[in-house]
Image (cartoon, rainbow, N blue to C red; front, side):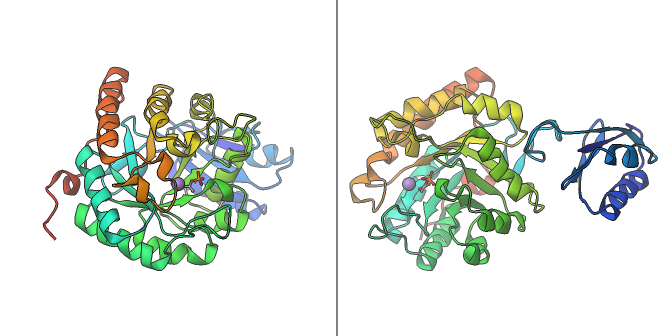
Length: 351
Ligand code: PEP
Ligand code: MN
């Protein structure tokens, strides 16, 4: 349910509505828009609540929200959410590219890859220190040691870091290094983890569960938003279908659909959906043409030596080519690449 305030409602009237919502045993979630403010009512609402809230000063209308996801929906918040990471604005109409290794391996490789993606124009460095692996016998990441390597790469290149968190108990430690926390596909319904990252104020990139419908994906976002963290970025990374020729099936439909349903930024991951490096560029361009706000791409200085996902990792040269093509496509679409932050544009310091 949302309480739509009159366009000239005062701050005091909005606060009074919030207070009344809490007195009635619900959670309030104010959204201050340019033209009007609304206050979302969270909890098991009942029809009589409409009358309770309609009579308050400054209230225009009280509307029941039809979607199962509320805070993630445009019904509740029609304004595009822009997630800020330093000087970067994700979801602002300018394309943002996050690139780097699947997993953090050696310091040498991570620094070389970081340098290469920075030079090609990436905005954010990716790299997994905690790796979710289908088999417990596969490389599960360097953990804390991996975070230290990422921190070094950040200092050297000025690139902000996105890295995955698997365990609610690691959220604080990962926050020390990460500028964006990644929730992986396999954790799309790990509700304690979603709630935990909802209690911080760092941006969270939420991958679509490989088995998740669009509604389930947006409800996963709702778990994060409902705890107070509004900095959620969605990421389409492919879903499981009968097709086995590619690793997953990239759901290009989901991009314009989710952009229409939700105000949250949407990023595309063409690496995990395809599983093959030579399919990454065409799918990346298709995703951007369909409306994605940016990309999350795996790149490795030496894909043959990657400890995970080498087959889908681009070489630095192939990544640079993708960036060139993206630059052209972005200009043609009127959604150019986001300018690089100052520290990225400056030459890297010698080690
Ligand atoms: C990853 O980004 O390396 C990863 C494990 O992705 P996903 O959760 O989409 O499989
Ligand atoms: Mn990977």
